[in-house]
Length: 367
Ligand SMILES: Nc1ncnc2c1ncn2[C@@H]1O[C@H](COP(=O)(O)OP(=O)(O)OP(=O)(O)O)[C@@H](O)[C@H]1O
Ligand SMILES: [Mg+2]
Image (cartoon, rainbow, N blue to C red; front, side, top):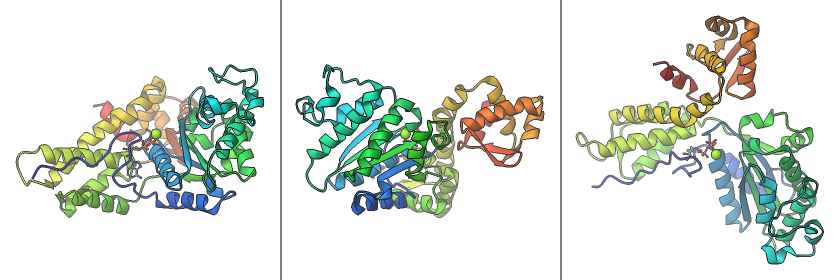
């Protein structure tokens, strides 16, 4: 038999073979659409650290909406977000001249479609209204925004204002925002924050190892490859329930088994798991941890490396000692790292890593 194609998808934004542990979010969203305007889950905020599945969750919710014949507009926050949304939501240039849109578009050349900040909320509203008008009964419009933490205050204010109006008018709309956990504590403008706080907030944490094990077993065995229980247990444990690591570990152990020329064929052995996990960890370091560490100042990295000497939460006074600095000095870096959600205060005087596998990465840097 030819070893089957690798089912694991260790690529940002790519749907995994099994979307593990997110059933309740999908169910809440489905209900929100079915319950009609006013349902709380039509305004959702998804937060999770990198690699926890923010983007694929948006894709999944988009699929749910499409099944109900809704229009789905996916955008990623970056400069020009609101203008892009308007351009994509408003029907094509020909229909842009629609009566509802005219006032907002006056004095603009249609080619460039940029709006003064003051005009954006009403222009976005008009665009959504026009699009909804063109849809059949029962159909609606879902807008998803990824990487919301990167949105400018101006764009977020415009989108929040428009969304609030459409929701209040009982329009067939839904908005889902996804971003890093820092989003909810960021010093965004109070108005925007109030709007997002009122959303149904879903935090994407690690998924349960019981679910990971079931999904791994299903994915592997359904493809016609065997794996025994000890190998499955080892693979499950190595993922730590972190979604990106699940795909990475799955992918590399599969590849290891496929390339191996000796030993049992069509089987992922415990040795395949071990070397697959090792390769997965290396990839995780390059892909997730390295970009985080690269942005930090040398002293911030020193703080993290002092923490990495511990196997669990670190005592802050001990970290300062290891840095050969005063508590006051070390606290500056502790605060910066807390603000960036790289570490978290777990109890009085103790901090721990907030990014999966960062500890292991920092340790390997020193080798
Ligand atoms: N619930 C899940 N079960 C299994 N695998 C998942 C799950 N969610 C995401 N993944 C996998 O994890 C990886 C990361 O997913 P995704 O790109 O959606 O994360 P993200 O939070 O958007 O990360 P980033 O911040 O890098 O954009 C992908 O390989 C994806 O297939
Ligand atoms: Mg993403």
